[in-house]
Image 1 (tube, rainbow, N blue to C red):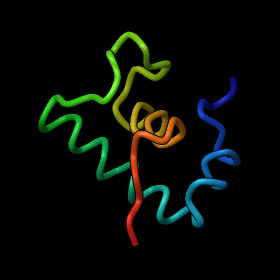
Image 2 (image 1 turned 60 degrees about the vertical axis):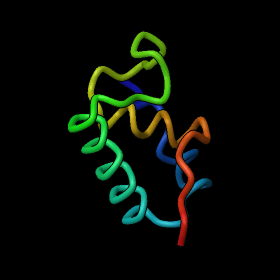
Image 3 (image 1 turned 90 degrees about the horizontal axis):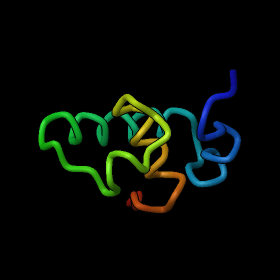
Image 4 (image 1 turned 180 degrees about the horizontal axis):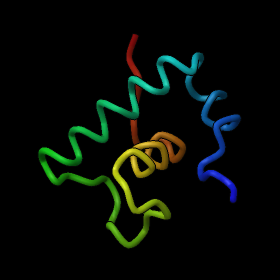
Length: 66
C-alpha cells in the first residue's frame, strides 16, 4: 500500500519532517473544528482529515509562513 501523497514529494515543499507534521496537524484540526475544506470532499483521495491536509499541502493550497 502506498501512502498518498508521497512523503518525499511533501519534503520538497516543507523543509523538515517536524514542520510537515506540525502543519498537517494544525490544518487537520481546523478541518474538524470548522468543517472547512479547500476542495470538495469527493475530490480528496484520503478519507481522514490528516491525509486531506497533506493533499492540500501537496496541491499548494496551504501556504507556510516562517
